[in-house]
Image (cartoon, rainbow, N blue to C red; front, side, top):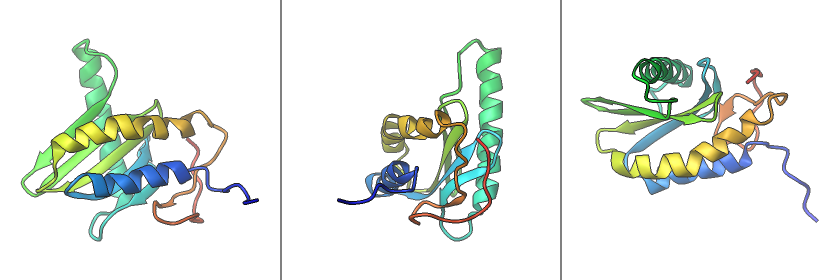
Length: 151
């Protein structure tokens, strides 16, 4: 009999690893708290995960304010397009965000189809376990020691 995994984010890691293979142009992913702190990441060289987490939190805050001011409901997602690529930020429950970095060839329509249905529920699970302190680390690592953040 196999011992149970001690990694509470194993399912999330698997789903996010699949995202890179399902959507052309995905260069990295960061799971962050709405406070801008990194929970998990898998980014390419040149993208600092802590900066991406802070940008995602800022985009979330502005989008949430716009939704409230316009009477359009709660935050769902926001996409920022630049000449060299994209940053898409998705809600993962009340306390988590999924930030996806894409190059200029990102299939954004496919990302919008894959990310919301496949990743928001998985991201919501850590919110349900508020007493658990998630490790900051790389999505590809089985477990990564590091500073602990409270969700």
